[in-house]
Image 1 (tube, rainbow, N blue to C red):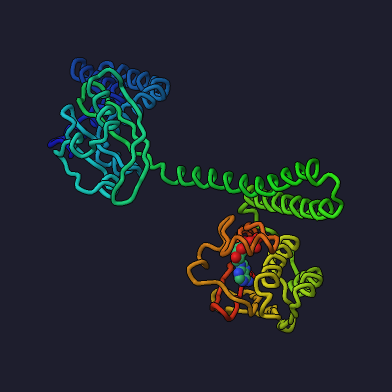
Image 2: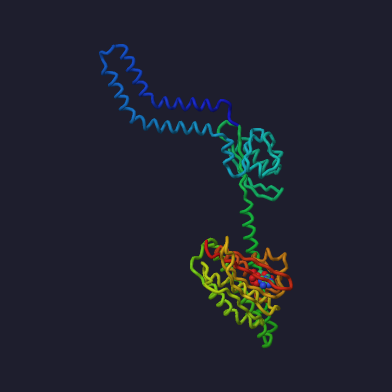
Length: 420
Ligand code: ADP
């Protein structure tokens, strides 16, 4: 939307700045010519002296002038910078409007975010929400130079914006609206609130049960040794549940504090997986599950943090022994994979239990998500195990894939890259 003749005007201004910068030299030249004409060759020294004087003055005045010149050039440059280019360089939706609240210009981000806008369209018709009307009225009335409101677009998808309106320059009669998308920040806030609500609920349930048993033990069961033993046992298991939950919450929070910290030591997967199997031996025996190993030959090392990878395989193998118990066996395999683009090592833990219905698989790594809450509780689950697994794998640049067929079992496969 450049003004006609704007380029010629700018060129003339640039020329004026250059001439002004060389004015001493020009003046000396003119005086020398005049003197030469007036006195023939009698005083040839005078013009030479004048020229010398001018040349001596130039460096002193030159630095000051070049600074002034640069400032003037910059001012000219800014005048030439079209509002259109400036608007296009802004990543957020931006709309310039006039005193009648009609759109004068909208950048590409605004066109992408709000369908059906065009120059000349009334903003009051486009954004009918009361908060937007108040925002426009505020700046157009001239009472405030700028103002900010929160505004939510409902369609096509809900998006929350913080919108600022301000007048542009002095006496331009133009105003600008800038929309800052807050949707992601709001989503994270909601997730955090949900998480706190879930964690509090998970802690409150065993706490309420313990409080109830304490009351019973102090009252009706005071003199009943059999009931006392039974209640104390339940209370012990409830405190164990709270302790597990707190441990998992702390693990998760530690991992979230440093999500991109890449672990750097070499981890021997064969040794790590073997020690996980050893540590879960008692649970496997208790659940009558046989653990089988199927490891590739040769070194099976990856870059990583041994304790964290131990936690990953421990969670997966524990789940396989608990939820896949009915299958009676679990196979742990370590194999090299993806010789081409993504070379790495796959550790797969496969059980032959009831499996996981397909619709649950995409959500299973979310915090507190369980396929069946009761089964998870009786199996001493916290609902955080796979979420911890996912966080650790992200830090290792690794991938988790879950395959399952209902009635046939589930396979959790971890792909750890061997370089890059
Ligand atoms: P939990 O502490 O409840 O075990 P996880 O995050 O480890 O939490 O697992 C989430 C849910 O995924 C479990 O509650 C269970 O319903 C399901 N699940 C995990 N592993 C298996 C498996 N091998 N077979 C069937 N279901 C599983």
